Amino acid sequence: MISEQAWADAQVLWDFQKMNHEPKPCSVGIGLGSHDLGVADVTADLYHRSMFPLIVFTGAMSRTTADRMPRGEAEHYRDRALELGVPASAILVEPNARNTGENIRFSRGLLTDRGIEVSSALLVSKPYEERRAYATARHLWPGIEFVSASARVPLAKYVDLIGDPKLVLDMLVGAQQRLLIYPDQGFMLRQEIPTAVTASYERLCSWGFTSRLL
Image 1 (spheres, rainbow, N blue to C red):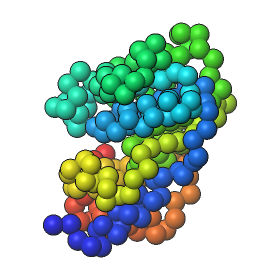
Image 2: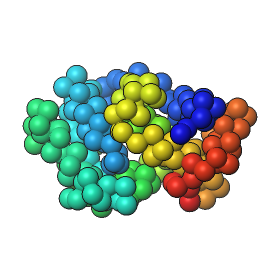
Image 3: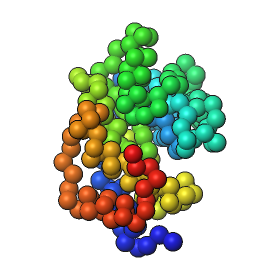
Image 4: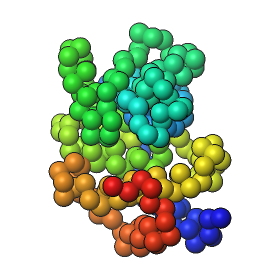
């Protein structure tokens, strides 16, 4: 049973992780691989809204996705986008990335190899990975304008969609930890983190939502 205070702290992290960018037309859309097939849904919707002419789905397989996406996250994302009416000609698949940094670096390499010029990219991620994706991309791919996007759903609805409250809170805590430690390791830009956000993160850690900590 997850306590009322734990849910309140999870909401604090959820709100902080969202960048609240307004989607706008970009050179390419990059769908970041994860356990959440909804990322492909959002990417397909943005494509149909003419936010980009080309999609890169990036992601291998992880411990979280081994059962539900055995052919790799990017491949399953591609299949979902095709079901939603995105033409195959508008999709590139990057099947090797195993973390956000590799998502960005390998996608950049794939586009460069194809001779595709990119001045801006719309990053599509899980709602609680927007800030991490943005800070990582800004660090690893300078000179490009980035916009963040994800499913616009409240935390409670997202938990219902995933069907595993503990997993969602664990992932929220893991995402927050990376914002705290990755800048010192050279993986992303440093961002100002409000004291209230850090306090919520520390309480959730103390209550055992730690399976996605490094």
